[in-house]
Length: 212
Image 1 (cartoon, rainbow, N blue to C red):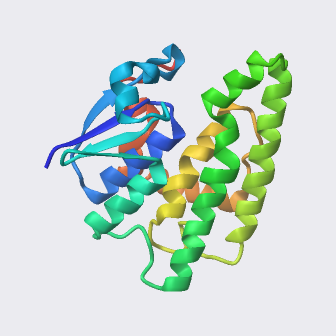
Image 2 (image 1 turned 90 degrees about the vertical axis):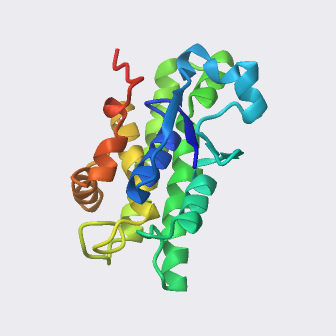
Protein backbone atom coordinates (compact mmCIF):
# COMPACT_ATOMS: atom_id res chain seq x y z
CA UNK A 1 0.00 0.00 0.00
CA UNK A 2 1.38 3.38 -1.04
CA UNK A 3 0.20 6.35 1.03
CA UNK A 4 1.18 9.98 0.42
CA UNK A 5 -0.10 12.94 2.38
CA UNK A 6 0.01 16.38 0.82
CA UNK A 7 0.39 18.54 3.86
CA UNK A 8 1.57 21.77 5.42
CA UNK A 9 3.03 21.71 8.90
CA UNK A 10 0.76 24.40 10.37
CA UNK A 11 -2.47 23.45 8.61
CA UNK A 12 -5.12 22.42 11.14
CA UNK A 13 -6.84 20.21 8.59
CA UNK A 14 -3.62 18.42 7.67
CA UNK A 15 -2.82 18.08 11.38
CA UNK A 16 -6.10 16.17 11.87
CA UNK A 17 -5.21 13.69 9.15
CA UNK A 18 -1.66 13.23 10.42
CA UNK A 19 -3.11 12.37 13.83
CA UNK A 20 -5.57 9.87 12.38
CA UNK A 21 -2.86 8.20 10.28
CA UNK A 22 -0.62 7.87 13.33
CA UNK A 23 -3.49 6.62 15.48
CA UNK A 24 -4.32 3.95 12.90
CA UNK A 25 -0.67 2.98 12.50
CA UNK A 26 -0.63 3.80 8.79
CA UNK A 27 2.78 4.59 7.35
CA UNK A 28 2.83 7.54 4.97
CA UNK A 29 5.13 9.81 3.02
CA UNK A 30 4.78 13.57 3.35
CA UNK A 31 4.73 15.95 0.42
CA UNK A 32 4.74 19.44 1.93
CA UNK A 33 3.21 22.48 0.25
CA UNK A 34 4.11 25.88 1.69
CA UNK A 35 0.77 27.69 1.84
CA UNK A 36 2.49 30.99 2.55
CA UNK A 37 4.18 30.74 -0.83
CA UNK A 38 0.93 29.61 -2.50
CA UNK A 39 2.56 26.29 -3.41
CA UNK A 40 -0.83 24.58 -3.34
CA UNK A 41 -1.67 26.47 -6.55
CA UNK A 42 1.00 24.69 -8.58
CA UNK A 43 -0.62 22.98 -11.61
CA UNK A 44 0.40 19.47 -10.59
CA UNK A 45 -1.27 19.88 -7.20
CA UNK A 46 -4.38 21.58 -8.59
CA UNK A 47 -4.77 18.53 -10.82
CA UNK A 48 -5.03 16.47 -7.63
CA UNK A 49 -7.14 18.91 -5.63
CA UNK A 50 -8.95 21.63 -7.60
CA UNK A 51 -9.86 23.37 -4.33
CA UNK A 52 -6.17 24.18 -3.82
CA UNK A 53 -6.33 23.12 -0.19
CA UNK A 54 -4.40 20.72 1.99
CA UNK A 55 -4.58 17.97 2.91
CA UNK A 56 -4.96 15.54 0.06
CA UNK A 57 -4.28 11.87 0.61
CA UNK A 58 -3.07 9.60 -2.16
CA UNK A 59 -3.70 5.99 -1.25
CA UNK A 60 -3.59 3.00 -3.58
CA UNK A 61 -3.78 5.23 -6.63
CA UNK A 62 -6.78 7.27 -5.46
CA UNK A 63 -6.78 10.89 -4.29
CA UNK A 64 -8.95 11.89 -1.33
CA UNK A 65 -9.60 15.45 -0.20
CA UNK A 66 -11.27 17.17 2.78
CA UNK A 67 -9.84 16.16 6.15
CA UNK A 68 -12.99 14.70 7.71
CA UNK A 69 -13.80 12.69 4.60
CA UNK A 70 -10.25 11.34 4.62
CA UNK A 71 -10.51 10.39 8.29
CA UNK A 72 -13.87 8.68 7.75
CA UNK A 73 -12.24 6.69 4.94
CA UNK A 74 -9.37 5.70 7.22
CA UNK A 75 -11.89 4.70 9.90
CA UNK A 76 -13.66 2.35 7.50
CA UNK A 77 -10.48 1.06 5.86
CA UNK A 78 -8.63 0.56 9.15
CA UNK A 79 -11.34 0.03 11.79
CA UNK A 80 -8.94 -0.72 14.64
CA UNK A 81 -8.35 1.18 16.80
CA UNK A 82 -11.64 3.02 16.24
CA UNK A 83 -12.11 6.77 16.21
CA UNK A 84 -15.89 6.50 16.31
CA UNK A 85 -17.91 4.78 19.07
CA UNK A 86 -19.92 1.65 18.33
CA UNK A 87 -23.15 3.20 19.62
CA UNK A 88 -25.09 4.92 16.83
CA UNK A 89 -26.24 7.91 18.89
CA UNK A 90 -22.81 8.41 20.37
CA UNK A 91 -21.26 8.34 16.90
CA UNK A 92 -23.59 11.14 15.85
CA UNK A 93 -22.60 13.21 18.89
CA UNK A 94 -18.90 12.74 18.20
CA UNK A 95 -19.40 13.75 14.57
CA UNK A 96 -21.44 16.79 15.62
CA UNK A 97 -18.66 17.98 17.91
CA UNK A 98 -16.04 17.47 15.19
CA UNK A 99 -18.16 19.31 12.64
CA UNK A 100 -18.74 22.20 15.03
CA UNK A 101 -14.99 22.77 14.97
CA UNK A 102 -14.22 21.85 11.37
CA UNK A 103 -17.15 23.66 9.77
CA UNK A 104 -18.07 26.52 12.11
CA UNK A 105 -14.86 27.56 13.89
CA UNK A 106 -11.86 26.65 11.76
CA UNK A 107 -12.80 27.96 8.29
CA UNK A 108 -12.59 31.63 9.25
CA UNK A 109 -8.91 31.23 10.11
CA UNK A 110 -8.10 29.56 6.81
CA UNK A 111 -5.21 31.43 5.19
CA UNK A 112 -7.18 31.80 1.98
CA UNK A 113 -10.06 33.50 3.82
CA UNK A 114 -7.74 35.81 5.75
CA UNK A 115 -6.01 36.86 2.54
CA UNK A 116 -9.35 37.59 0.89
CA UNK A 117 -10.38 39.81 3.80
CA UNK A 118 -7.05 41.63 3.69
CA UNK A 119 -7.40 42.12 -0.06
CA UNK A 120 -10.77 43.73 0.51
CA UNK A 121 -9.23 46.39 2.70
CA UNK A 122 -9.91 45.13 6.20
CA UNK A 123 -7.35 46.11 8.79
CA UNK A 124 -5.32 43.21 10.16
CA UNK A 125 -6.37 44.01 13.72
CA UNK A 126 -10.03 43.84 12.69
CA UNK A 127 -9.47 40.51 10.94
CA UNK A 128 -7.69 39.04 13.97
CA UNK A 129 -10.36 40.30 16.36
CA UNK A 130 -13.07 38.71 14.23
CA UNK A 131 -11.18 35.41 14.16
CA UNK A 132 -10.76 35.51 17.94
CA UNK A 133 -14.45 36.14 18.48
CA UNK A 134 -15.40 33.14 16.36
CA UNK A 135 -12.84 30.90 18.07
CA UNK A 136 -13.83 31.90 21.59
CA UNK A 137 -17.57 31.60 21.08
CA UNK A 138 -17.11 28.31 19.25
CA UNK A 139 -14.87 26.74 21.87
CA UNK A 140 -17.24 27.91 24.60
CA UNK A 141 -20.06 26.08 22.84
CA UNK A 142 -17.92 22.97 22.39
CA UNK A 143 -17.08 23.02 26.08
CA UNK A 144 -20.77 23.04 26.90
CA UNK A 145 -21.46 20.19 24.46
CA UNK A 146 -19.31 17.85 26.56
CA UNK A 147 -19.80 19.43 29.99
CA UNK A 148 -21.57 16.32 31.28
CA UNK A 149 -18.84 13.96 30.05
CA UNK A 150 -16.07 12.57 32.19
CA UNK A 151 -12.77 11.00 31.26
CA UNK A 152 -9.56 12.32 29.82
CA UNK A 153 -10.95 12.75 26.30
CA UNK A 154 -13.99 14.49 24.84
CA UNK A 155 -16.27 11.47 25.05
CA UNK A 156 -14.76 9.36 27.79
CA UNK A 157 -11.63 7.28 28.17
CA UNK A 158 -11.04 6.62 24.45
CA UNK A 159 -9.73 8.91 21.73
CA UNK A 160 -12.37 9.83 19.16
CA UNK A 161 -12.71 11.98 16.07
CA UNK A 162 -13.74 14.82 18.38
CA UNK A 163 -10.30 14.90 20.01
CA UNK A 164 -8.53 14.65 16.67
CA UNK A 165 -10.32 17.79 15.47
CA UNK A 166 -10.21 19.72 18.75
CA UNK A 167 -6.47 19.66 19.40
CA UNK A 168 -5.38 21.60 16.28
CA UNK A 169 -8.09 24.18 16.94
CA UNK A 170 -6.82 24.78 20.47
CA UNK A 171 -3.37 25.54 19.07
CA UNK A 172 -4.86 27.67 16.33
CA UNK A 173 -6.73 29.66 18.94
CA UNK A 174 -3.55 30.43 20.82
CA UNK A 175 -1.84 31.51 17.62
CA UNK A 176 -4.54 34.14 17.12
CA UNK A 177 -4.43 35.22 20.75
CA UNK A 178 -7.91 33.91 21.45
CA UNK A 179 -9.10 32.72 24.83
CA UNK A 180 -8.78 28.93 25.04
CA UNK A 181 -8.70 28.53 28.83
CA UNK A 182 -11.79 26.37 29.09
CA UNK A 183 -10.87 23.88 31.84
CA UNK A 184 -12.51 20.84 30.24
CA UNK A 185 -10.92 21.51 26.85
CA UNK A 186 -7.49 22.23 28.30
CA UNK A 187 -7.59 18.96 30.26
CA UNK A 188 -8.50 17.07 27.09
CA UNK A 189 -5.68 18.78 25.22
CA UNK A 190 -3.14 17.77 27.87
CA UNK A 191 -4.30 14.15 27.80
CA UNK A 192 -4.27 14.02 24.01
CA UNK A 193 -0.81 15.51 23.60
CA UNK A 194 0.55 12.80 25.90
CA UNK A 195 -0.70 10.20 23.39
CA UNK A 196 1.95 9.07 20.86
CA UNK A 197 -0.29 9.65 17.83
CA UNK A 198 -1.00 13.24 18.80
CA UNK A 199 2.65 13.88 19.66
CA UNK A 200 3.81 12.58 16.27
CA UNK A 201 1.32 14.79 14.43
CA UNK A 202 2.24 18.08 16.12
CA UNK A 203 3.35 20.81 13.71
CA UNK A 204 6.78 21.25 15.24
CA UNK A 205 7.48 17.54 14.68
CA UNK A 206 7.04 17.83 10.91
CA UNK A 207 9.94 17.95 8.48
CA UNK A 208 8.68 21.18 6.89
CA UNK A 209 8.17 23.00 10.21
CA UNK A 210 9.33 26.59 10.05
CA UNK A 211 8.34 28.46 13.23
CA UNK A 212 9.92 31.63 11.88
